[in-house]
Image 1 (cartoon, rainbow, N blue to C red):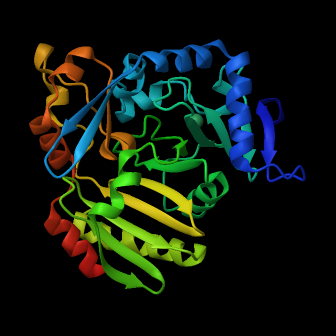
Image 2 (cartoon, rainbow, N blue to C red):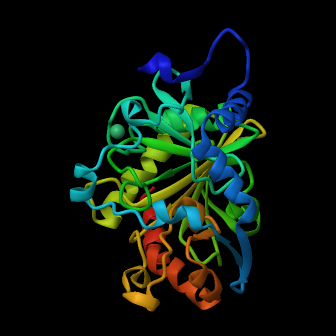
Image 3 (tube, rainbow, N blue to C red):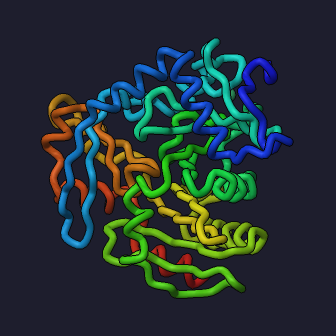
Length: 324
Ligand SMILES: [Zn+2]
């Protein structure tokens, strides 16, 4: 199964970079796999709308194909009953991927938000957990740079397969926070050579780690999640979305600290229902709306309200920083 699903391997003795191989995969899969070709073609028709929220701007994307993810049921009973769509044996016959370090498969997402959008799933059916895979997360960001950034959705805040470990990747700089960050960041701490910052006046609760040493980045991240647990009162993985990029020989890990997955308006009945289900991309400033009605309706008050509702308070961020 693994060899039949492998388009290419990384690393290999061919000396191709991972971002080149991934781009090549995306081109090849569009030719061979009609579902992906349709998804990419549909991207030509998505609409955008910028919403001025005062200190920051959010970008809305009207993308009907995303109804599959945005509307996905992710309760444990539904997850248990469905066939896991990330397990290799359940992939469509046409689908192949780039095998990464013999453990992860870089796959094309057939309902893309971006011109190239990858799902990077573990070759085994193991639960979604960033602490277990933080080194892979960091090395993927480095190996996919400078073309792509990598992101992670926690099992309870945006992952549509919480039972199967996966990351995603998007063209670098297309999630707005990646470009806006310097404007909002205030450095508040250093853990050895890793800079710790928070974003201010950004309408969301964000902690950023930056550093050039992989091991120090790993340790700082694990220190951060350990500090989050008692403050957020959980023994499980603290709720978070994480976006990681690598440039100028240094990693930047952006952690959105979450209080809940879906806002109250998501659960309204009929016309009052707003299908916005924030994960990394949305909380990072590009809000995907699969319904045209919502795309028209959403204004700055709603964006600010949703961001605030699904993020932890600034007091919680201060307590986490204090414990770091
Ligand atoms: Zn699976």
